[in-house]
Image (cartoon, rainbow, N blue to C red; front, side, top):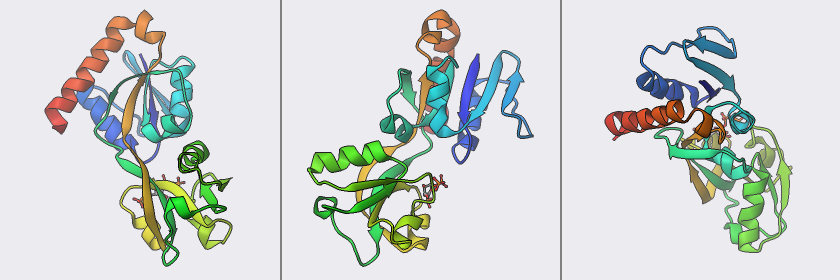
Amino acid sequence: MQIALPRGRMLPDAIDLLKKTVPGLSVPEDRDLIYKNGDVELLFAKPVDVPVYVESGVDVGITGKDVLLENSYDVFIPTSLPFGRCRLSLATLKGEEVAGAEMEGYRIATEFPNISRRYFDSLDVPVEIIEVNGATELAPRAEIADAIVDIVKTGNTLKDNGLVEVETITESSALLLVNRIAGKTKFDAVNELIYDVREVIKREFN
Ligand code: PRP
């Protein structure tokens, strides 16, 4: 079975969960992006690409709910996972706090243009969305945006950049994803993995 894992900050928790679920599982010590481990093949992808791999044929994956809220993918999501918790928030520079409903005409920098667009549409507030690919906190400081929509975990990045949250748009955590065809053609193996993951969560995380 192939399992796509998210490189970056969620990876240690994802590996920890898998090691508890698949006895004897080992992980690569180098930067190889594919690692064969008995019946299990681990693939290391960018979190934003994990659903692309799973939709396109990789059996199983782990990534954040934020990724699935930003773009829709035809994958089965059997369970959420007890890590990768964060929120997607609207933030402005300190001293310039304004509610989302008052942001008409604002320039909003974000890696999440679709979530941001839906949020402001739901408020019926027209804004300009400026799409960036990370380090979003820079945009208001560089005066190319008036506010940002970004992931907040500890809040340190916002604080260090003189920004404050004005709204929480949504909460996020990791999700288990399953390829729809693998869910049928590899029914037993996939269901055993889902069952075992749920048991580990019950045993270790509750
Ligand atoms: C994420 C997010 C924030 C930061 C928030 O960035 O975009 O910048 O983490 O975490 P904190 O609240 O604990 O400070 P990431 O490190 O994933 O990189 P990116 O900026 O390139 O998206």
